[in-house]
Length: 125
Image (cartoon, rainbow, N blue to C red; front, side, top):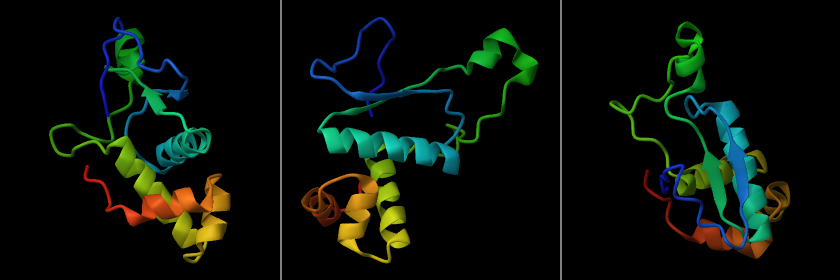
């Protein structure tokens, strides 16, 4: 994952699939959002981009209402987008009892693309 300064612009000249949010941790809800992001980006052959905020916007406008972070930088390393994609694929594959064709349909990707992704080793981080 690449962190970009807000003033530098995004390297997405050919387009991208983007989600914007205040991701306070990678819980199941965020995993679903990010899995959907990756699925749509993969189906279109585009990069997936996550735009988030540090600090959380409520830390600025209403600090007493700001949620605690679910992923603490000091104790856990955030998952990479590649790792999130791998985890999402594995979850959907399990939901489809290992059926590659059904999983590819559920993910909105070509079966060969899924097989190629599954042929790679699980990404670190």
